[in-house]
Every structure is written in structure tokens, then in C-alpha cells.
Image 1 (tube, rainbow, N blue to C red):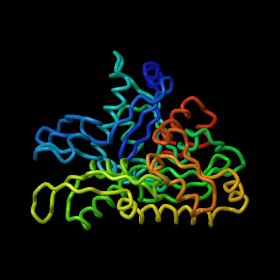
Image 2: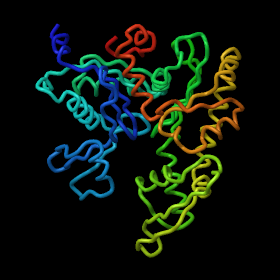
Image 3: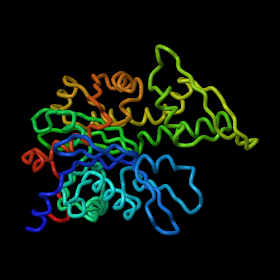
Image 4: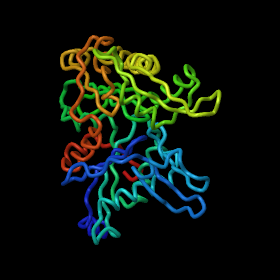
Length: 346
């Protein structure tokens, strides 16, 4: 009864708790938060200094007593306490009115397909400790399909590949459930690591994660481009220890990320091979859908289509697709009951 009373002063939330970014969808306002999943903490006082975008700017630049922490690794909570504080900050930011202290929202959270029961409970507990009165867990692939307005409850197959920061979720969905699936630890972060390793091995230059991400966005591609691209890269020369600048082009970046792109494509083909024939025919007719930030890699849709021989479509606004899906479920009780995962409180 008391929770219901507090719920009157709360805004129900859909949350995409991502390795790289956390997105919050408000049931009546749409997407209200899209910030990096980073928390800066003063280790002397255990005080939170910054959360989100401001904390990301501190990565790699902090003095010894300040630590910029990424509390999620490959979609899994690696630091429970910091995750709880981050969620509490975002929930409080949404409820920035006089009732912020007593807000108790319902929360729908997207999670990777391969989370264990212990890991699911960690997500649920972190959200409840952060102020949620009721937590619903849903697979990210399902949330992405719902966010893209795909027919997830029909007796036809929907194949979606959600390429996030830490994981790539590949799933075939039919009748409100996941029929075949695979979760890969090969996604946006691995693309960045590939670029860092390539530049270190080929040029003896060390660069950071943020620069690697900028290179990927600026000139990265999965297939040859009509117009070649190049950019200047600055880092530390490992031989002299001094700053050094080089020019790097799209062909070199394709070579750097090629193995990870190939891993994603091979897994998609494996899923197609294990999917029931009736559903495969639907996929060949309707195509495969790409979502998540990785879907924006130039030519990735073409590379997948050439290898799998099926049409590939990028959903509208792939970066926010999972968050939109969690938010849409808040206003669709019937669909939520069909797709929600059992939790420890059920």
C-alpha cells in the first residue's frame, strides 16, 4: 500500500543498462538520459564526484586518489556498489522535483541473453537499492525488437542483431519468445581494442580508448568505401616515449577490426543453421535487423548481407532501440507480461 502511494509521485522508467552507455526512457516523455556508464569516485572519502558524461571526460586523466570506474563489463555488473550509485543518480535526475526523495518508480531493464540467475539478481537488487519499487527484466534483443516496432508476438520469425558496447546479442524471436540465440563478447569495445592493438603493433604507438572510438566512428568500415578516408592519430611512441603523430586510413582500420566483424558474421550464420526451417524461410523473406551502436559501422549491413545471402536492414535510431523497447513496455501491460523474465521476487 505504501509503495503504491509512493508510486504516485514517481515516473516509471525503461533502462538500457549498457556497458558503454546507460539510457533512460520516461513513460510519458520518451528518452531523457543518454550518458556513459562511468562513475568518478574520490577513493579517500568514497564520495561520488561525477556520473555519466562528466565522469567519462576524466577517464585516463585522474590523479591517484580519483578513479573513473566503468561498473559494467560485457553487460554484467562488475561493481555492485558503484552500479547502485549510478542508477540512484540517474533515477534521482529524472525525479528532480520536490518528491525526489520518496520516488519509487517501476523500472524495466534490458539485460544480455546469457546472464546467470546470480547476475540477473544483481541487476534487480541494484535497481531496487537505487529506489525502484518493482523491477522487470527483459532480454536486450527482445527490447530492441520491440523498440523497432517489429512483430515479436506473431507466429513469424524476427531476427535481430543488437551490437552494443560489451556484447552482441543475436536472436530469432517468434510468438513472444526467443527461439534461438547467441550472446557474443565481441562488440563496440572489442572494435576499439582491435584498433589500439593494431596501431601499437604496426606503428609502435600507444593510444587510448577514447581516441580508438573516435577513429572507429571517423573512418571505420566493414567493406571498402567509395571514397577512401584517413585521419591523423596522435599517441605516445613506445620507442622514444615522446608524442608522435601518424596518418591512418580506412583500409588499415578494416584490417584491424576484420577478425571481430568476421566473428559476428560467422555467429549469425551459425544461428541461421540451427533455426527451425519454417522460421528461416520467414527470415529470408523479411530480412535481418541490426540495432545498437555497432549497427552504425559503415557497410556492416552490406558485409552481413553478402555473407548470409539475406537482406539486412538497420532499424531507425539503432542507438536508442533497446531503451525505446523498455519504455514502450511500461505502457503495454499485456505485452510486458508475455515477454518479461521471471525474477527472484516472483
